[in-house]
Amino acid sequence: MIKVGLLAYGAIGDEHNQAVLTTPGLTTVAVCDQKAERISAALKISPEAKVFTDADEMLESKLFDLVIISTPPNTHAAWAKKALSLGINVILEKPMALTTAECDQLMALAKEKGLLLVVYQNRRYDSDFLTIQKALADKLIGEVFHYEAFVGGYGKPCSFWHSDKLISGGAIFDWGSHFIDQIMTLLPYPIDHISGLNQKRHWHHITNADHAQVVITYKDGKQAVFINSDLAASRKAKFHLLGTMGSLTGNWDKQAGDRPADLPAIITLTKSTGETQILPPVKAAPNAFHQGVADFLLSNIAMPITTAQSRDVVAIMQAAEESAVLNARPVTANLLTQ
Image 1 (cartoon, rainbow, N blue to C red):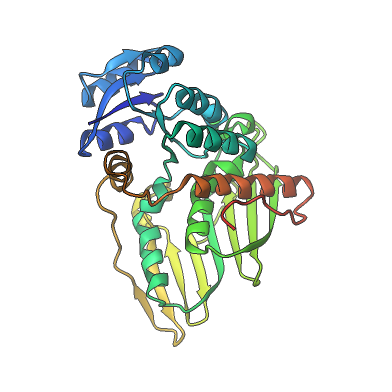
Image 2 (cartoon, helix red, strand yellow):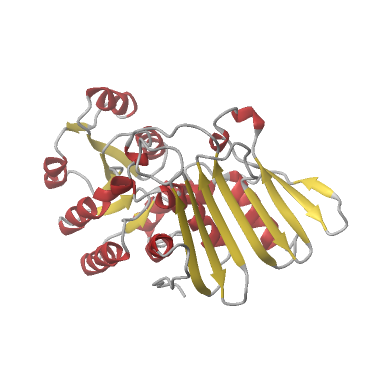
């Protein structure tokens, strides 16, 4: 059994704890959070777990083989560095860190120690993403040359750390950690340059941009666009892919009401003839990510998500932020996987 510690038990805590509980080979033995209600929630799932309120004390206890770090993004690098230094395998919430320099330091340390360092890219297992991935593998729309991903709406952003640029990395980092990872997985081609733009127009109680955009331009002219907006009175489709033989559209599921990102998009294929077809959703195996971690640690089966991929997501977002300072002038990203 791989003994697991949960460092911070925020909104994602139950998801990790439930996954560990139902994944053969994993067991939660420790949980750390400063809020009593979060500890109580954790113990409802893992009643035998040892409780900590101090993260340093928890890590230094060495009660576990693997720690899942769910602290705010600006602390990811520091806690991961400490865990790896103590000989503990690490799962990090996304983004991996706020700079590629931090990512590279963590990767070097994990390699030196012979430990697992992986980022929980959970949106790789969303059914809308998997449905698009299968459609592209089946060549239903030919060669993709234009990709758009959108998230947002019109509404006052929360004042929690997600909206604080110094903590979250900003609007590009907050949702880009998901959507840019999906783009790079579906379109793994040589990238020429990145353009980014942050607009602050209305919501001045927070430091994140109101409207953020990233454009990835590939060496052969393909483009992928990601938009995160809190000023979109009318939402665009979550996904819109154009190919040489058709297109795919991911429409928001109206059952989600004002929180459309809570449900997978409905993927529609439009053929070159104009004929349309809603594609049957592809679903991931339960706890596929956590099972992949267990299989790697126990049987050395390769992980489907690599640390280098998550590091390069940070590289894209960092380049986009640099471009935004230059009013969207192109910037070359420092990529490992190209």
